[in-house]
Image 1: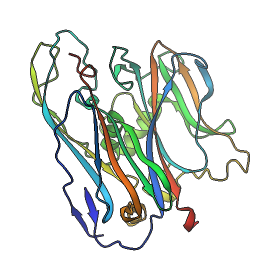
Image 2: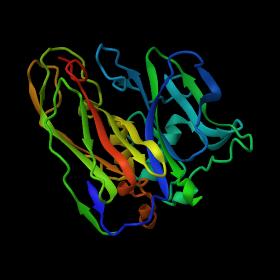
Image 3: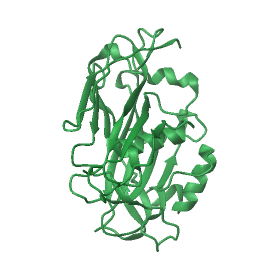
Image 4: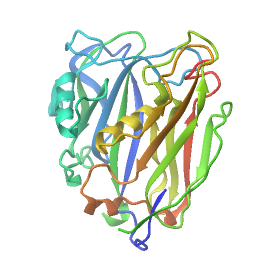
Length: 175
Length: 160
Protein backbone atom coordinates (compact mmCIF):
# COMPACT_ATOMS: atom_id res chain seq x y z
CA UNK A 1 0.00 0.00 0.00
CA UNK A 2 1.33 3.47 -0.86
CA UNK A 3 0.12 6.21 1.46
CA UNK A 4 0.38 9.94 0.86
CA UNK A 5 1.68 11.90 3.83
CA UNK A 6 1.08 15.53 2.91
CA UNK A 7 -2.64 15.50 2.11
CA UNK A 8 -4.85 16.12 5.08
CA UNK A 9 -7.98 18.16 4.41
CA UNK A 10 -8.89 18.19 0.72
CA UNK A 11 -11.73 15.79 -0.05
CA UNK A 12 -11.58 13.55 -3.10
CA UNK A 13 -12.26 15.73 -6.18
CA UNK A 14 -13.45 12.84 -8.30
CA UNK A 15 -13.75 9.11 -7.95
CA UNK A 16 -12.13 6.90 -10.57
CA UNK A 17 -13.97 3.60 -10.92
CA UNK A 18 -12.96 0.56 -12.94
CA UNK A 19 -15.19 -2.41 -13.52
CA UNK A 20 -15.48 -5.36 -15.88
CA UNK A 21 -18.69 -6.66 -17.41
CA UNK A 22 -19.22 -9.61 -19.66
CA UNK A 23 -21.18 -9.51 -22.92
CA UNK A 24 -22.56 -12.72 -24.38
CA UNK A 25 -21.90 -12.50 -28.11
CA UNK A 26 -22.95 -16.06 -28.83
CA UNK A 27 -26.65 -15.45 -29.38
CA UNK A 28 -29.46 -12.93 -30.00
CA UNK A 29 -29.33 -9.94 -30.62
CA UNK A 30 -26.13 -10.94 -32.39
CA UNK A 31 -24.84 -11.26 -35.09
CA UNK A 32 -25.03 -7.61 -36.15
CA UNK A 33 -23.39 -5.64 -38.94
CA UNK A 34 -22.63 -1.99 -38.25
CA UNK A 35 -25.29 -1.81 -35.58
CA UNK A 36 -25.53 -1.36 -31.83
CA UNK A 37 -23.45 -3.77 -29.73
CA UNK A 38 -24.08 -2.39 -26.24
CA UNK A 39 -25.37 0.77 -24.61
CA UNK A 40 -22.80 2.79 -22.71
CA UNK A 41 -23.57 4.15 -19.26
CA UNK A 42 -24.28 7.88 -19.08
CA UNK A 43 -24.11 10.16 -16.06
CA UNK A 44 -20.39 9.76 -15.40
CA UNK A 45 -17.39 10.72 -17.49
CA UNK A 46 -15.88 7.80 -19.43
CA UNK A 47 -12.12 7.60 -19.73
CA UNK A 48 -11.74 4.28 -21.59
CA UNK A 49 -13.31 0.95 -22.45
CA UNK A 50 -11.02 -2.05 -22.78
CA UNK A 51 -12.28 -5.08 -24.72
CA UNK A 52 -11.14 -8.66 -24.29
CA UNK A 53 -12.67 -11.34 -26.52
CA UNK A 54 -12.65 -15.07 -25.99
CA UNK A 55 -14.47 -18.37 -26.26
CA UNK A 56 -15.42 -19.29 -22.73
CA UNK A 57 -14.07 -22.46 -21.19
CA UNK A 58 -17.22 -24.26 -20.07
CA UNK A 59 -15.47 -26.90 -17.97
CA UNK A 60 -17.38 -27.32 -14.70
CA UNK A 61 -16.00 -25.14 -11.92
CA UNK A 62 -14.07 -22.74 -14.15
CA UNK A 63 -14.55 -19.05 -13.39
CA UNK A 64 -16.66 -17.26 -15.99
CA UNK A 65 -13.75 -15.22 -17.32
CA UNK A 66 -11.53 -18.16 -18.26
CA UNK A 67 -11.05 -18.53 -21.99
CA UNK A 68 -10.64 -21.76 -23.91
CA UNK A 69 -9.54 -19.71 -26.94
CA UNK A 70 -8.78 -16.02 -27.20
CA UNK A 71 -10.52 -14.28 -30.11
CA UNK A 72 -8.67 -11.82 -32.29
CA UNK A 73 -10.72 -11.44 -35.50
CA UNK A 74 -8.86 -10.33 -38.62
CA UNK A 75 -11.51 -10.30 -41.34
CA UNK A 76 -14.47 -8.00 -40.59
CA UNK A 77 -17.89 -9.68 -40.77
CA UNK A 78 -16.18 -13.07 -41.33
CA UNK A 79 -14.11 -14.08 -38.30
CA UNK A 80 -15.74 -14.79 -34.94
CA UNK A 81 -16.04 -11.96 -32.45
CA UNK A 82 -16.38 -8.18 -32.52
CA UNK A 83 -14.89 -7.39 -35.91
CA UNK A 84 -15.66 -3.66 -36.17
CA UNK A 85 -15.99 -1.34 -33.24
CA UNK A 86 -16.47 2.27 -32.19
CA UNK A 87 -18.39 4.56 -29.87
CA UNK A 88 -21.50 6.23 -31.30
CA UNK A 89 -23.76 9.12 -30.36
CA UNK A 90 -27.20 8.92 -31.96
CA UNK A 91 -25.84 6.19 -34.27
CA UNK A 92 -22.98 8.33 -35.58
CA UNK A 93 -19.46 7.22 -34.78
CA UNK A 94 -17.58 9.68 -32.60
CA UNK A 95 -14.62 7.42 -31.82
CA UNK A 96 -12.96 4.96 -34.16
CA UNK A 97 -15.68 2.89 -35.95
CA UNK A 98 -13.27 0.83 -38.02
CA UNK A 99 -12.04 -2.75 -37.85
CA UNK A 100 -10.85 -4.55 -34.69
CA UNK A 101 -7.33 -4.91 -36.06
CA UNK A 102 -7.30 -1.25 -37.00
CA UNK A 103 -8.14 -0.39 -33.39
CA UNK A 104 -5.33 -2.63 -32.18
CA UNK A 105 -2.85 -0.99 -34.55
CA UNK A 106 -3.87 2.40 -33.21
CA UNK A 107 -3.50 1.09 -29.64
CA UNK A 108 -0.05 -0.27 -30.43
CA UNK A 109 1.12 3.21 -31.41
CA UNK A 110 -0.72 4.87 -28.54
CA UNK A 111 0.73 2.59 -25.88
CA UNK A 112 4.09 2.24 -27.65
CA UNK A 113 4.24 -1.53 -27.40
CA UNK A 114 5.79 -3.91 -29.90
CA UNK A 115 2.60 -5.94 -30.06
CA UNK A 116 -0.76 -5.68 -28.36
CA UNK A 117 -1.78 -8.59 -26.13
CA UNK A 118 -3.87 -11.04 -28.15
CA UNK A 119 -7.60 -10.35 -27.93
CA UNK A 120 -7.24 -6.91 -26.33
CA UNK A 121 -8.37 -3.55 -27.77
CA UNK A 122 -8.96 -0.20 -26.05
CA UNK A 123 -11.17 2.76 -26.88
CA UNK A 124 -9.50 5.59 -24.97
CA UNK A 125 -10.53 9.23 -24.84
CA UNK A 126 -7.43 10.37 -22.91
CA UNK A 127 -4.65 9.40 -25.27
CA UNK A 128 -2.37 12.32 -24.41
CA UNK A 129 -2.61 12.09 -20.62
CA UNK A 130 -4.86 15.13 -20.34
CA UNK A 131 -7.70 13.88 -18.15
CA UNK A 132 -9.89 16.83 -19.24
CA UNK A 133 -10.47 14.98 -22.51
CA UNK A 134 -12.68 12.30 -20.95
CA UNK A 135 -16.06 11.76 -22.58
CA UNK A 136 -18.49 13.79 -20.48
CA UNK A 137 -21.92 12.16 -20.52
CA UNK A 138 -23.59 13.97 -17.63
CA UNK A 139 -26.02 15.91 -19.86
CA UNK A 140 -26.75 13.17 -22.40
CA UNK A 141 -30.20 12.42 -20.97
CA UNK A 142 -31.18 16.07 -20.93
CA UNK A 143 -30.02 16.52 -24.54
CA UNK A 144 -31.63 13.24 -25.65
CA UNK A 145 -28.36 11.80 -26.89
CA UNK A 146 -27.96 8.05 -27.14
CA UNK A 147 -24.49 6.69 -26.46
CA UNK A 148 -23.49 3.17 -27.41
CA UNK A 149 -20.80 0.87 -28.72
CA UNK A 150 -21.47 0.07 -32.37
CA UNK A 151 -19.92 -2.21 -34.93
CA UNK A 152 -20.12 -5.75 -36.26
CA UNK A 153 -20.28 -9.04 -34.39
CA UNK A 154 -19.97 -12.59 -35.73
CA UNK A 155 -21.30 -15.16 -33.26
CA UNK A 156 -19.94 -18.53 -32.15
CA UNK A 157 -20.88 -20.91 -29.34
CA UNK A 158 -19.75 -19.58 -25.91
CA UNK A 159 -18.22 -16.42 -27.41
CA UNK A 160 -17.83 -13.63 -24.88
CA UNK A 161 -16.58 -10.07 -24.87
CA UNK A 162 -15.39 -8.58 -21.61
CA UNK A 163 -15.69 -4.81 -21.32
CA UNK A 164 -13.64 -2.99 -18.70
CA UNK A 165 -14.80 0.56 -18.06
CA UNK A 166 -12.74 3.32 -16.49
CA UNK A 167 -15.15 6.05 -15.43
CA UNK A 168 -14.85 9.23 -13.40
CA UNK A 169 -17.51 10.43 -11.01
CA UNK A 170 -17.13 14.02 -9.79
CA UNK A 171 -17.58 14.92 -6.14
CA UNK A 172 -21.18 16.25 -5.98
CA UNK A 173 -20.24 18.71 -3.23
CA UNK A 174 -17.62 20.34 -5.47
CA UNK A 175 -19.69 20.66 -8.66
CA UNK B 1 3.37 14.54 -3.01
CA UNK B 2 5.25 12.71 -0.26
CA UNK B 3 4.60 8.99 -0.31
CA UNK B 4 5.41 6.07 1.93
CA UNK B 5 4.96 2.35 1.46
CA UNK B 6 3.20 0.43 4.19
CA UNK B 7 2.81 -3.29 4.52
CA UNK B 8 -0.75 -4.44 5.26
CA UNK B 9 -0.85 -8.18 5.81
CA UNK B 10 0.58 -11.54 4.88
CA UNK B 11 -1.84 -14.43 4.60
CA UNK B 12 -1.73 -17.97 3.34
CA UNK B 13 -3.79 -18.65 0.27
CA UNK B 14 -6.32 -21.36 0.92
CA UNK B 15 -7.30 -23.50 -2.04
CA UNK B 16 -10.62 -24.51 -0.61
CA UNK B 17 -11.63 -21.09 0.63
CA UNK B 18 -11.26 -18.89 -2.38
CA UNK B 19 -12.10 -15.46 -0.94
CA UNK B 20 -9.54 -13.19 0.64
CA UNK B 21 -10.84 -10.08 2.43
CA UNK B 22 -8.65 -7.56 4.19
CA UNK B 23 -9.35 -4.13 5.68
CA UNK B 24 -7.23 -1.38 4.15
CA UNK B 25 -5.81 1.06 6.73
CA UNK B 26 -7.73 4.35 6.71
CA UNK B 27 -5.42 6.79 8.47
CA UNK B 28 -3.84 8.42 5.39
CA UNK B 29 -4.72 9.28 1.78
CA UNK B 30 -4.00 6.38 -0.56
CA UNK B 31 -2.23 6.28 -3.91
CA UNK B 32 -1.88 2.58 -4.76
CA UNK B 33 -2.10 -1.04 -3.63
CA UNK B 34 -0.01 -4.06 -4.49
CA UNK B 35 -0.95 -7.73 -4.06
CA UNK B 36 1.90 -10.21 -4.24
CA UNK B 37 1.11 -13.87 -4.92
CA UNK B 38 3.68 -16.57 -4.31
CA UNK B 39 3.28 -20.31 -4.19
CA UNK B 40 3.47 -23.63 -5.91
CA UNK B 41 0.84 -25.46 -7.90
CA UNK B 42 0.61 -28.78 -9.59
CA UNK B 43 -1.92 -30.40 -11.80
CA UNK B 44 -3.07 -33.61 -10.16
CA UNK B 45 -5.08 -34.91 -13.11
CA UNK B 46 -3.30 -35.35 -16.42
CA UNK B 47 -4.83 -34.06 -19.61
CA UNK B 48 -7.12 -31.43 -18.11
CA UNK B 49 -7.48 -27.95 -19.44
CA UNK B 50 -5.09 -25.09 -18.78
CA UNK B 51 -6.30 -21.86 -20.33
CA UNK B 52 -4.21 -19.72 -22.67
CA UNK B 53 -3.78 -17.00 -20.06
CA UNK B 54 -2.12 -19.38 -17.61
CA UNK B 55 -1.23 -17.98 -14.23
CA UNK B 56 -3.27 -14.79 -14.68
CA UNK B 57 -6.41 -16.83 -14.24
CA UNK B 58 -5.49 -17.66 -10.67
CA UNK B 59 -6.93 -14.30 -9.67
CA UNK B 60 -10.56 -14.41 -10.66
CA UNK B 61 -11.69 -11.06 -9.34
CA UNK B 62 -10.08 -8.01 -7.73
CA UNK B 63 -12.46 -5.74 -5.80
CA UNK B 64 -12.12 -2.71 -3.56
CA UNK B 65 -15.27 -1.52 -1.84
CA UNK B 66 -15.78 1.47 0.39
CA UNK B 67 -18.34 3.52 2.25
CA UNK B 68 -17.40 7.17 1.87
CA UNK B 69 -18.93 10.12 3.69
CA UNK B 70 -19.54 11.98 0.40
CA UNK B 71 -19.87 9.27 -2.26
CA UNK B 72 -21.62 6.70 -0.07
CA UNK B 73 -21.26 3.00 -0.79
CA UNK B 74 -19.10 2.45 -3.86
CA UNK B 75 -17.19 -0.34 -5.50
CA UNK B 76 -14.01 1.38 -6.65
CA UNK B 77 -12.78 -1.52 -8.71
CA UNK B 78 -14.35 -4.81 -9.72
CA UNK B 79 -12.23 -6.47 -12.37
CA UNK B 80 -11.22 -9.89 -13.60
CA UNK B 81 -7.57 -10.71 -12.94
CA UNK B 82 -6.49 -10.93 -16.61
CA UNK B 83 -8.23 -7.61 -17.39
CA UNK B 84 -6.40 -5.85 -14.57
CA UNK B 85 -3.12 -7.37 -15.70
CA UNK B 86 -3.58 -6.20 -19.30
CA UNK B 87 -4.74 -2.74 -18.24
CA UNK B 88 -1.54 -2.27 -16.25
CA UNK B 89 0.55 -3.81 -19.01
CA UNK B 90 -0.68 -1.15 -21.45
CA UNK B 91 -0.99 1.97 -19.33
CA UNK B 92 1.96 1.62 -17.01
CA UNK B 93 4.38 0.34 -19.65
CA UNK B 94 5.60 -2.18 -17.14
CA UNK B 95 3.39 -5.14 -16.73
CA UNK B 96 2.74 -6.68 -13.37
CA UNK B 97 5.37 -9.36 -13.19
CA UNK B 98 4.10 -12.88 -13.83
CA UNK B 99 6.67 -15.53 -13.25
CA UNK B 100 6.49 -19.31 -13.33
CA UNK B 101 9.38 -21.64 -12.71
CA UNK B 102 8.22 -23.61 -15.74
CA UNK B 103 5.25 -23.44 -18.06
CA UNK B 104 2.04 -24.78 -16.58
CA UNK B 105 1.72 -28.30 -17.78
CA UNK B 106 -0.95 -30.93 -18.01
CA UNK B 107 1.60 -33.49 -16.87
CA UNK B 108 0.45 -35.13 -13.64
CA UNK B 109 1.84 -33.65 -10.43
CA UNK B 110 4.43 -31.50 -12.17
CA UNK B 111 4.98 -28.67 -9.69
CA UNK B 112 5.35 -25.08 -10.82
CA UNK B 113 6.39 -22.17 -8.65
CA UNK B 114 4.47 -18.96 -9.28
CA UNK B 115 5.32 -15.45 -8.24
CA UNK B 116 3.36 -12.49 -9.54
CA UNK B 117 2.26 -9.00 -8.60
CA UNK B 118 -1.00 -7.20 -9.14
CA UNK B 119 -0.73 -3.43 -8.80
CA UNK B 120 -3.59 -1.01 -8.58
CA UNK B 121 -3.36 2.79 -8.64
CA UNK B 122 -6.35 4.80 -7.46
CA UNK B 123 -5.86 7.77 -9.85
CA UNK B 124 -6.59 7.11 -13.54
CA UNK B 125 -3.54 5.62 -15.20
CA UNK B 126 -1.19 7.56 -17.43
CA UNK B 127 -2.48 11.05 -16.66
CA UNK B 128 -0.39 14.14 -15.90
CA UNK B 129 1.24 13.74 -12.47
CA UNK B 130 -0.12 17.12 -11.38
CA UNK B 131 -3.67 15.78 -11.79
CA UNK B 132 -3.11 12.63 -9.76
CA UNK B 133 -3.61 14.27 -6.38
CA UNK B 134 -7.27 15.01 -7.19
CA UNK B 135 -8.00 11.27 -7.38
CA UNK B 136 -6.25 10.02 -4.25
CA UNK B 137 -8.57 8.06 -2.01
CA UNK B 138 -9.26 10.12 1.11
CA UNK B 139 -9.35 7.05 3.28
CA UNK B 140 -9.92 8.98 6.55
CA UNK B 141 -13.40 9.85 5.16
CA UNK B 142 -14.23 6.18 4.63
CA UNK B 143 -16.03 4.15 7.26
CA UNK B 144 -15.34 0.94 5.33
CA UNK B 145 -12.48 0.24 2.93
CA UNK B 146 -11.83 -3.35 1.97
CA UNK B 147 -9.84 -5.31 -0.56
CA UNK B 148 -11.63 -8.46 -1.73
CA UNK B 149 -9.74 -11.01 -3.82
CA UNK B 150 -11.49 -13.99 -5.33
CA UNK B 151 -9.06 -16.73 -6.16
CA UNK B 152 -9.37 -20.06 -7.83
CA UNK B 153 -10.94 -22.87 -5.90
CA UNK B 154 -10.30 -26.60 -5.67
CA UNK B 155 -12.07 -27.42 -8.90
CA UNK B 156 -11.28 -24.45 -11.10
CA UNK B 157 -8.64 -22.86 -13.27
CA UNK B 158 -5.92 -25.41 -12.84
CA UNK B 159 -8.10 -28.46 -12.89
CA UNK B 160 -7.43 -31.30 -10.57
